[in-house]
Image (cartoon, rainbow, N blue to C red; front, side):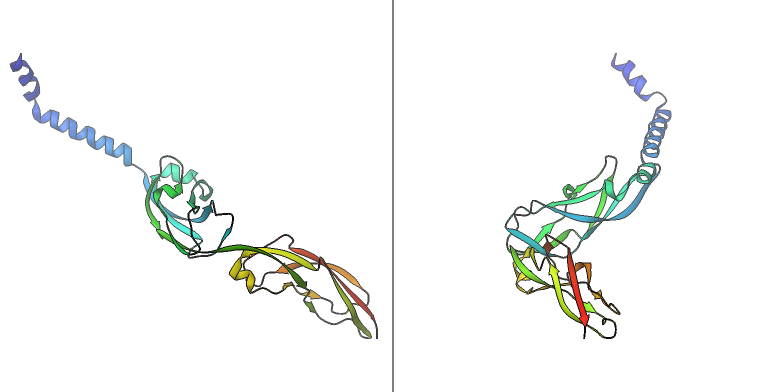
Amino acid sequence: MNKIFKNILTENLTIKIISIALALFLWFFVTFKGQTETSLDIPLELKNTPSDMEVFKQSVKKISVSISARERILKEITQNDIRVVVDISNVKLGENSIPITKSSIKLPRGIEILRIDPSTVKLLVDKKEQKTIPVRPVITGKPAKGFIVSDIEVNPSLIRIEGAQKELDRIRLIKTEPIDIEGISESITVQAKIDPEGKIFRIDKDIVYVKVKVRRK
């Protein structure tokens, strides 16, 4: 019996080795044919921010994710199919270094992550604060000849803002975008958007009504 098995194993050994090699080659060819690499810049999502804290600075807003997949799969996906989500429930006040790992990347099946850049994001965290501040309308231009501005009313005249304590401590008032009154000869009421002037905060209203009253000199 042993002799029979030995003959089966050794007979035409060269042909068998070639057959196995060919089978492996075909497997690799089918598996990796059409594999393509690409990179996508994905917005960084922060979740589970502590309710009493506020992230007011982060080193990056997007993460570059290099991926590999079959060409057909890559053609079908969009940036919305891939997400970079980081849990920051354990952040502390001040500077935090948060790792971006493969587990942070949410993506469809059949896609391999090759590289993540950067692999760490730095966050500055502060206490969350609210305050109510006055709105100052920004007026440009002049009324028609013979008229002057007699009064300016803003509704609402106060707006509540929310954000990081250090950021809000610098804000004493909030301005509107410019309102042009060039050449008017009667009172007007216009909608005006709030101008954040590069400051980072949230507001309960981003539009106010401004009434500009004019009268003859």
